Image (cartoon, rainbow, N blue to C red; front, side, top):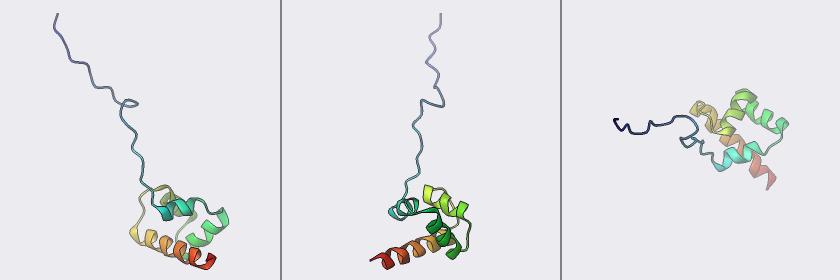
Length: 79
C-alpha cells in the first residue's frame, strides 16, 4: 500500500479574506441612510456605490476621494 499525502482541502479550511476598512469608511457606515444619500449625491454617484465603498469594496478612486471629502466636510460642520 502506497502512502499518499493528505489532500489540501479548499473552502472553509482557508482563512477568510476581509477588506481592511479605514476610519472614514467606518464613519460612513454609522451615518443614517438620508445622510449617506446626500453624500452620495454630492459625490455624483449612487447610494449603492457609496455603500460599497463603506464596506471596503473597490470603486473608482475619483468617487472614493469625493466621498472622503464630503465626509470630512460633514465632520467639520459638526465641530
